[in-house]
Image 1 (cartoon, helix red, strand yellow):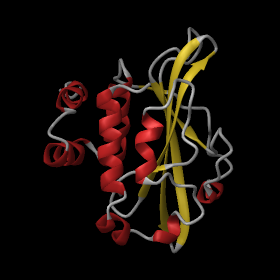
Image 2: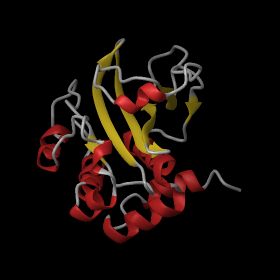
Image 3: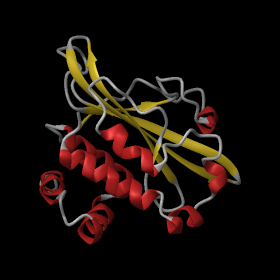
Image 4: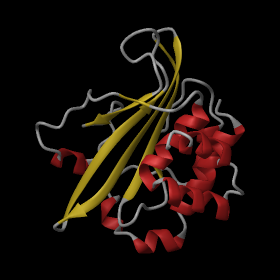
Length: 195
């Protein structure tokens, strides 16, 4: 089960992501073939038992003209508890849909990925289709680089992902205005890395 802060944060983001203002401001054709979770279904997803994963994608608030989509998986693999957040960011380039995706993950045991990290993604592990990902060039890696993150728990991992999508200044502003500054300590931890 996700922590209250983690769940509350995603519910807040989904509320913004599914708001009529946000949907009208983006190109709806970008997500027409993608299995989106309705905002009314999100609370059920976030209180699901350990081992569950989203059956579709959570639509997050747009990042400029692009639409971030989130897939969650939480459970046990290889004898350790894992959290996997895959974010695909869909947009257009010269009128054609394009996307990039990154997976943000908790440590995976004592192996090569035994630390909080993110890495690029070419396709979704769960078989869910995001057609614009097929436009990625053949040379685009899906397993490297694996970048270490300033995270020690799921809330910090989520904050790292949000900073990557929206930038530190915009995320700070968004959450101060409509999330009662609840991520302030996690944002400060990331901000403290800057001299």
